[in-house]
Image (tube, helix red, strand yellow):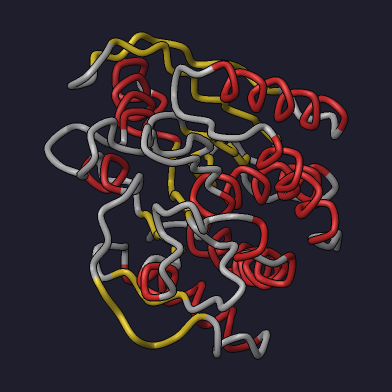
Length: 280
C-alpha cells in the first residue's frame, strides 16, 4: 500500500506559507489555488473549481472550493475535507501554518497516495474556501462558507445521496499534537479513527479527552452525512498559536502531518467496509 510522505506534505506546507496571508478573495489565495491545482495535476488527480460570490458581513467575496476526485470501485463517495483559507487579520501578519496551511498540504499529499491505492469507494478531496469568519469573532453564518455552499449544491443536484461519509482535517500541524475526540462528530466514525490510532500506537496524539467543536463538518452533519473532525484546537490555543502571529512554520512539524496521515490511511479500510457492507 502506498505511504503518506510527510516530507512531500511539508514542502507543500512550506510553499503555501511562503505566499503569506491567504484570506478568501485575496491574490495570495488565488496563488495557493494555482499551486494546489498544479500539484494535483502532477499526481494525475482531476480537480474542478466550484466558484461563487459570497456576501459576508464586511464585503462581497469571490470564493472557490477545489474538488479533486480519485475514482474507486464504486460510485459512492467518501469526502476528505479541509479548508485552505487563512483568517483575515488587519492588525498583524497571519500566515496560518497550521490553521489553513496544514489541512491544504495534507490533502495534496493524500491525493497522491489515494491515486496509487486500490480504493473500494470513490474519494473526493475538497479544499474548502471561506471556513474562517470575516469578522473577528466566529458567529452566526459568518463562517463555513465553503462547506455550506458545497453541501447546498450537492443537495440541489442530488449528488449528496452518494456521499456516505466525511473526514474533516483542520489544524493538524501542531508540533505538540494533541487531538481530542469531537463530541459533535459521528460516534462510529470517530471510533474507527481513534481505534486506528491505537493500532498504530499513536494514541498519545489521538487522546481520549473530548470536547465540542464547530467546524466545516457541521453542514455535512446537518445534511445527514456521517462526519468526523480531526482537529487540534485546544492545545494549539493553549500554546498561544491559534489566530496569532505565532502560527508559523516554527510552530508545526512534518511529524504531526505524518501521524495524521498514517492514522487516516489506517482507518480507511474499516470505513470502507462499514459503508459497503450489504444491508439486510
